[in-house]
Picture 1 (tube, rainbow, N blue to C red):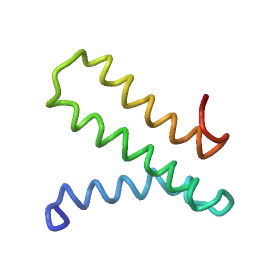
Picture 2: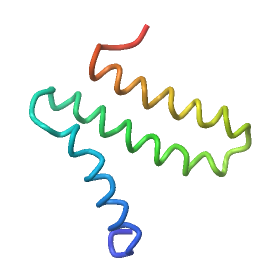
Picture 3: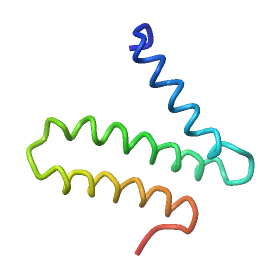
Picture 4: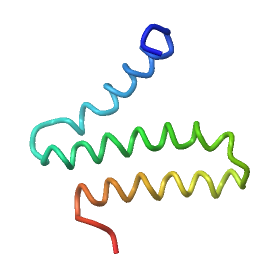
Length: 79
């Protein structure tokens, strides 16, 4: 995928979206959680295209996981 143009485009977009997250301050593990949340949203929706089910339920599942990662990074684990 690295050699394909789409791979380079994806890499550039992920780097651009993650720049604000990668600024110094939060612990490295918290920054990884936030970047993982971005990747989860993209990869989750891509993967779930091929899974049967209600599109809204799939979207909500992906968002729940992404929000959980960000919440852990900023406030600790969700209850």
